[in-house]
Image (cartoon, rainbow, N blue to C red):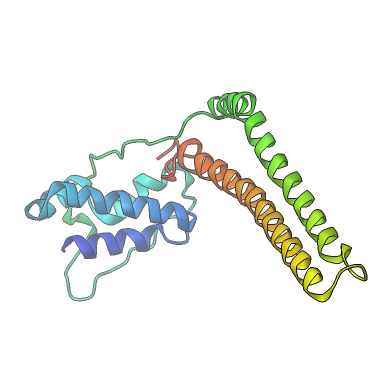
Length: 200
């Protein structure tokens, strides 16, 4: 059995027994584990980890409610007893505690919040004012100016409206980027980004 077959069996034992995201995190971890060991040590790593079924049972731990159905590799002669009992325990990788996340958010809100709010409201208010002024300038000369004067004034009004719309777009963009940054921070640092939890 080679590394690819071993990992394929491990995925088969974990699929539908854990959420898909956790299965992907576990598979990435063991793929990196094999890669770190090097190509010449695949057999040693498989002997260390035990059979894919035993490793899957170890990963599932208390969360598994029913026996895993054995998956036979066609024509390989693979059997459950081909490996010793697993002695490897995956390293637990966790994110920061939720209380630390709340403290970081509070500190960010105290120090960066006012600057961010001022920036968003400043850009938004300036954008609205530019759009209103541009609209007023564009239609303000109707009936009082010559055709060329009206054209000149309308051009200035449209430019002011375009600047206002760009400022409004900038305010919306800042809000979206801030929300994305908070989501990324929560997913990467608070939840650990690996899917490993206690009990593995």
